[in-house]
Structures are given as structure tokens and as C-alpha cells.
Length: 187
Image (cartoon, rainbow, N blue to C red; front, side, top):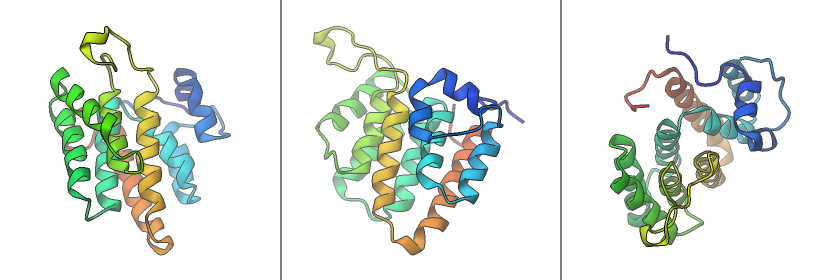
């Protein structure tokens, strides 16, 4: 079994100071995946989404967000498909050109669309977040996780209440598989 990125909740909170506020109260010594499984069992979707967004490495987090959004919005608009495709291209081959393309698209995308936030999550994964002619401004280490959270939250808000448990359980189980490295998505 692959080693999980953050063994305990405390490890994750120590690495990402804003995660504690985004996730909420948690027993720090608890195993990360056990904590995530408890959130799923309790149907605590928002903390579970937040925790998963921070738990996963950036590429895996973007892949998880894209797959989750596609599950929640089975018929995305053409512009949303384009945004998701930019992010997915970066996940498949994380070169600078693809990252900048996702960033550029996300910057001008509809901020009410979860797909825009998936593209921004890819774009904020590293490198500079401003056009090349403006120099180099690095993304904050937490920006990808924060964009992933927004993307999944927006998509979640569009799901019928009766569908939330099944869809979110499936999405979060996918996140657990990604955390284990048991997915076709590269890390």
C-alpha cells in the first residue's frame, strides 16, 4: 500500500494552516483516512470535501475535482467542458504550457461554474499566477485545495437533496482511492 501524504489530521493541519478553519474541529492524532471515512459516514459533506481537497497532492486533487464535477453535472455546458478539458490535460501531462492554459481559461471563466474553479485549481498548482510579462508571482501552497473546495461545493449545491448521499459517497470514495494511489490518475 502506498503511504498516504498526511498520516494524521494534525500532519495535514500543520502543513496547511488554513485547513483547520476550512475543515473544522478534528482530533489531531486521528489517522487521516479514518477521519475522512468518519466524515463520510456522518454525511458531513463540506468538511469531507475540504479535508479531501487538502489531503490529495495537487494533480490528484485536480483530477478528483474534475471527476467529481463531471459526476455531479452530467451535462456540462460547452464552456464547462472546455474548462474541465484544460484541467484534465494538465493532470495527464503537467507541463507549464498546459498549466498556463488552464489558468488563463479559469481567469476569464464564469465564477459561478464549478468547471472554472477546477481550471483555476490546475492553474494555481505551481509556477507563476500572473502573465509572464508581469514577472513571477507564485501561487500560495493552499490555492489549489481552496479552488478544489469551491468547485466541488458549487457542484454539490446543484444536486438534488435525495441524490447527495450517493453522489458524495462515490466522489469521496474516489478521493480515498486517489489518496492511496489506487487510481489511473498520476500523482
